[in-house]
Image 1 (cartoon, rainbow, N blue to C red):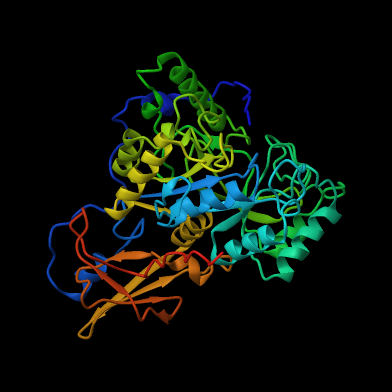
Image 2: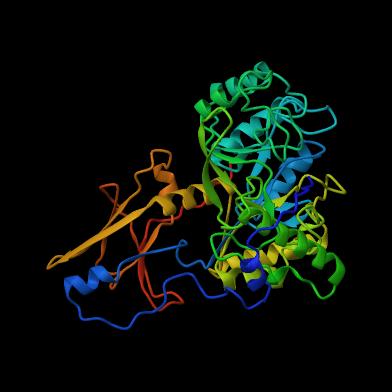
Length: 448
């Protein structure tokens, strides 16, 4: 996938200021506050929403498109290595939580739902039901009509398989993106129009080809980390492209509108006027957004410096990649990639980076962005109420929501009027503040 911005003059001063590696690097989580008297007014004032689930300081999804996955073996073996600690062809699994995508109508040399056998389709359905396959990656290159889309959606619905995330694929006719991904899926009257069916089925989050080289979203946009002294020319070119995206965004470009605020999510409307959440992905590799986005290349993306920076800046990242692009189907991850994934798992275990699926990151961010916090304190203790009024945010999206409180041992927590009976009571984090949270429940790998 390539992007070719139209250069225009705009307010570029912000991006100039953000070229310094130290710029905009202040933590965005609440900082320690001086103690206040233990009275109800002061207690209520000290109640704030923690931006990320306790105890994590960053959040990462490895959002893999399945392009060029050769067969069922490569698809399932790579997922088993990523999601379990079982013995696999790549060695002992790293036990992360990493989702995958699926499409339907593809050429016979690529793994897809209609191309695999009954066992492969049963495995895909099982993984959708556990949340490990969480993305519909268009309906495929050969899906050119509404009937193709309807057949796929009927198959998913018939088996109780629910997907909420859509990702455009290359130049598939069913894509939603018009400016980058050349789709007609939301153009009423086109042969490939299906947005009404797909949104009614349950798609809420949509990716339309927008990728940034900026590492970490939902924090101030910073370009300083793009430059790589070992690859000066290529990284300067990448930095320049990202700089231009910011200029275009501030000049009113719709194509690059998501780059200036550097937010994971925004509300937008498809061409048929249906409202969805659109999301932004990132690839912080010095060579640009289309570099090292393979099973072999992920070791050059998930470097220690990259992960350190993500934690230091306390960002959210949905990583653009294609882990189905492998040199060997029976051993998808070379040593450098395995080492990087093991390092990521260690940081997860240390409570630094929450690694989860694209669907779970998006659901959490939608819930936290819409949450409204209030609290009351009296002689019986502190009552904290979270209201998440958005009808598109389900109770599963509340998982991980954490609230700073003066005393985590006694605070009570409700969401939308419902008590959280198994509330987690957390000791002080790096800010020095305790919190209470809704438990984050890991996905369970199915028996395949």
